[in-house]
Image (cartoon, rainbow, N blue to C red; front, side):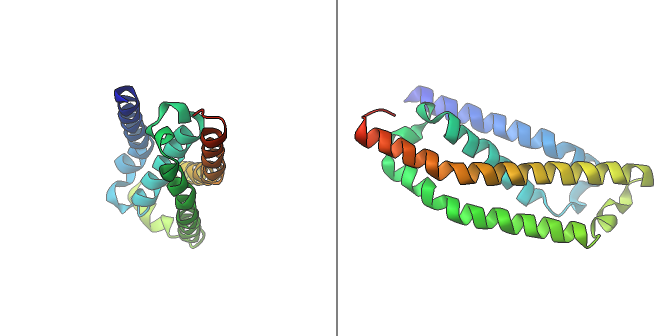
Amino acid sequence: MIQKINFELLWWVITAVVTTLILLPIYLNIGEAYPFYRDNIILIVIAITWTRYIFFMKHHWLTFSNYIKAFFMVLSIPTFLYIMGAFYDFQSFYDDGLFDGVLSILPYDKQSNMLLYIRTEMIFFLAFAFICNFMLPFRMLMSIWRKINKGTE
């Protein structure tokens, strides 16, 4: 049990470091003018955490309780709605050209590169979180079925 807790803590540290490294270029260039920090952080955490729960189920505390697995199955519904809302907000902001005001503090030659970085990483983690959120309930259901019928996992 101690190993599983240490494994979980290690992964939360890795998730925090990865999130920081991904958002650091945005923060260093734009500062607090970027309006999607919260959404971006949540999407990165969802993508990495749900991926861990899908592929490393045997190494997590989730394996002990079917109720926790069922909770994560139900949690995927509001998570899906959140991901779609974040995508809509980001795409509306992008399509309305509002990034021009946010990026105006940068020199003109750096604006297009920063906008490309922001759009690429945001869409990547939106898609990544969406796919993982779609797969998670099936993985939890498979784990519950294995535990009840086979006595494993």
